[in-house]
Image (tube, rainbow over all chains, first blue to last red; front, side, top):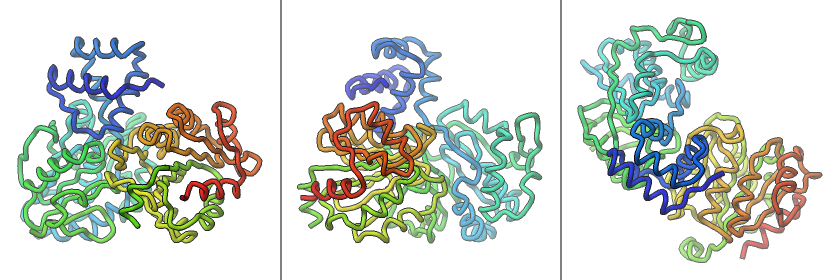
Length: 271
Length: 194
């Protein structure tokens, strides 16, 4: 296994920023290093010099490289008990609102956005909700927009759905086509997909609920604070912020302004 | 004690295990000297349910605090850290934890190799890697990385392991320093506790 040196990594990050505007300098170093080592091996560069040459001179290759640096692991109803808490503790408090705005920041291929749409539909709230789904990576968004997932995943997703408190027949939300499942258009109708870079872009609306799950783990503390402040600016009083199972507000300035909900990584803005 | 041990903690121990390793830990934990003066991180293969049953089970066997790792928390001695289900555990140079939910490695997330390799970079020759029972090749590459940085390698004696493959792979492919039964592992860990 190849191992990039710290100095070499700095050279690459500078190239990516200066030539292409991608700023990875505040990504969590240890895992970014693994990602770079992984692409280096996968694409079989014989030396660091050759990897760097390709990055500096092949703007087509950059697309692949950047896509491989970001992690796009996701699933429907990921951590089912988290979704159960959304059903029982969060959505009922939003029901009285005339309009509900939700932002999935770093939505990847969209599985959690469709999960959310199903929750909203079952709570009778989908018709007055809007789900903004953003990611840095246009390719994963294109895939999310299609509302298609591999049929082989549906058994697991269906189990997650039941664990999340779902009581309907999960298969009524999609139609099977060859080896794929396509979600009902009705679910996608309330979704807006757009690229958004958490490192450099600003807030674009005010939301009742922001979900950003297993994205912050890839950022260093300074960038985490920046992104959490961006979320804070985008949340009204009594709105909610939801993070991944092992992420926390503990090391940020938001801690004192938000009250955690019992057990799950959901916080409510109280100041 | 806490302040003091941060300064004096020189050693770090990473323990990896799969099938059959929980039983080993249930025997080792009760005899560990308290307080723990070194850093201790445990990576076990487990089902990807995000409950904390395993941490709870282990915490019943010792008065040393047992905690699942949270992102960005400082790596401190005196605590037994457990890799959470479905995340790889990495360590940054500033000695904070970093979690990663990228692809499985050796069909595993958490992967032992990932944590061992990352810990080797940060702790270098102060690191002791311990590989327990398991029916998987995870851990061997990690031990190699630890050796390369001057650390110490320990495996469970395969004959005492419920699944011998994991320690055996390591013994065949790396220069393991100590091959120990369960009691031997316990006393080695207690000898580190200065």
